[in-house]
Length: 292
Image 1: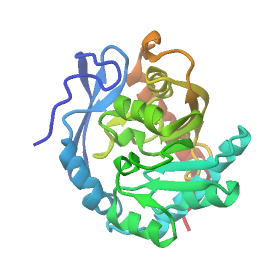
Image 2: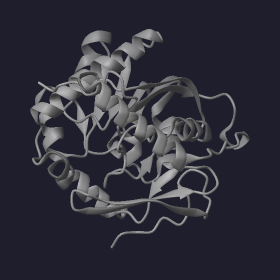
Image 3: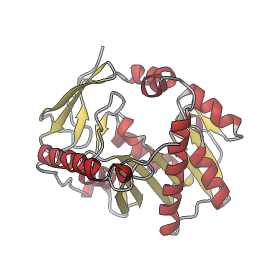
Image 4: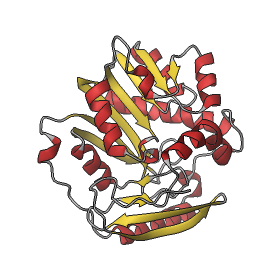
């Protein structure tokens, strides 16, 4: 049975209103808007146990039609790895120990390992993708809890590329990463779909982030946002489909940070999706990069 989310995952407010209702590949998806902070979140949604089973066995089948990596997915992952590497280099980040959560086929891990010469570890719940990554010689676990007993659990770079929107307890998860796995001077690299340009409302997306709510989430859990970029790489040259954020542990305690609410979320969503349709009509070849 789906579970109802009674409190906003970010600010814990009990006040919310219906934001969007649709069918996504045969699944009913309902999203609500927090009346206090402006976060958009899915409710009702799958229970934690259902989510674990979904990601282990069904996720790729629902999204791609097969469990293993497809040529389209591998193409996108290569392009995303290049884009994320460019951001790291622009900010002088050169990790020695790197953890990629939701590492998929391991392309980002291998790209960073080859470029930085760093030690890399991945976490991937999907069985077929995890097996694929391991066959590339990568160390990949099914769950982050498997790292808890390791002799050297700290990493100076942790990435969650298209992972944060899937987490039902995003605040608790990010706090655990900062406390248990990130070095005190380490970096967090996060990429999520942009609520104001991406379709966003999918069965696996527990949260739909705007630039404002993504920043507020990181600040609430004790991170300082160093950079945030809106872009479409590798899928588009002109549509701001994604938000990529680089952050470090903050010097200000999370309890001292108040959440700045976002207003006019529905209007911004309508305007953003309207502008996306305009750009697609005017510049179709730039709006969507062909996948080889």
